[in-house]
Amino acid sequence: MSAGSASGKSFSAANADMTVEECENMIQGSLRTPTVKFLREHLEKSGCGIAPNFIRAVIV
Image (cartoon, rainbow, N blue to C red; front, top):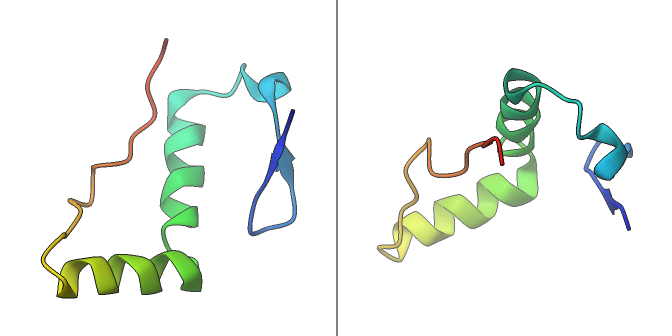
């Protein structure tokens, strides 16, 4: 099962060899998309702000 991204690329378990740094860069890029920016701004306005480092990559 794979999930698409805003860039049109698709990601799956096949990308499990990605480094944490590469994953963090993808996360940071995703946080700059218009939809995510809109949602984060409105969450903050309603008093439910999310810290910039709330969404992080981890090694499992």
